[in-house]
Length: 150
Image 1 (cartoon, one colour):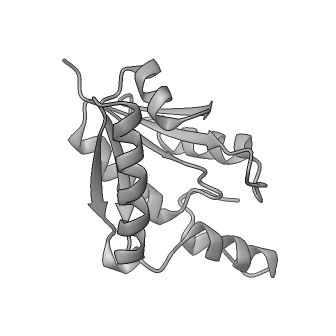
Image 2 (image 1 turned 135 degrees about the vertical axis):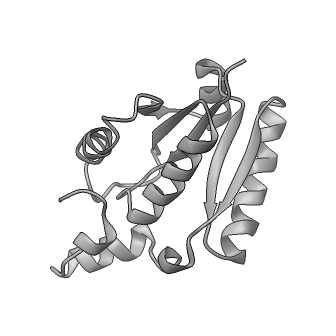
């Protein structure tokens, strides 16, 4: 049986921290789906199509990595694509508390779904999508934080 993992998020934008987690997860699983979730409660700063296409280009030479946009619950999406693993990155204890709660909810919705936590590289732990958006809003250079040109 193929080990399929999903790395899901809004990725607004997809940062070098996200890329680090995705690269490490791609090495650990047979297939990694980087899944851009459409969250109706959030207004995106960067268009989802623009970011997902940039990430798709980034991983075009890695046939075991797939980029998708999905709507709805991640646990339901996992069933649909046959994934039994979710990958989440943890920068700090606050991330753990938040992600732990979500993983328990996902497990309740899909008992076959395991969440795997990867600790963020300490050199990247300060980077978050919200910080990158704020820097960009004020016209500063965000290229050190993104694995693709914007």
